[in-house]
Image (tube, rainbow, N blue to C red; front, side, top):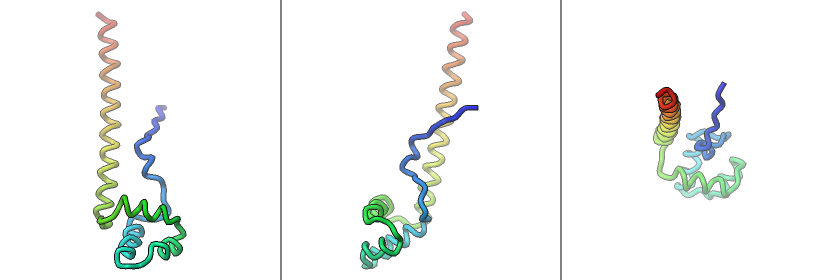
Length: 99
């Protein structure tokens, strides 16, 4: 069985917060609520909140969901390309040894 490790998804760490919760927290901050208060309520570090803001500011939940779907599709397509490239290289190697 082949095991593959995908390093591209390292920025998509498992989180205990859903996209809608993150967007809600960012919207509250945009409406004037202090980031410190939001962080205390959610139990996250202030740096985490600012990373969310840098990454997701201006998005709504549907846009965030679409972004994740596109990233997943891109990952799948890259994996397909890698598999096909490997198959192609193996076939070329077999054909070159045959002749």
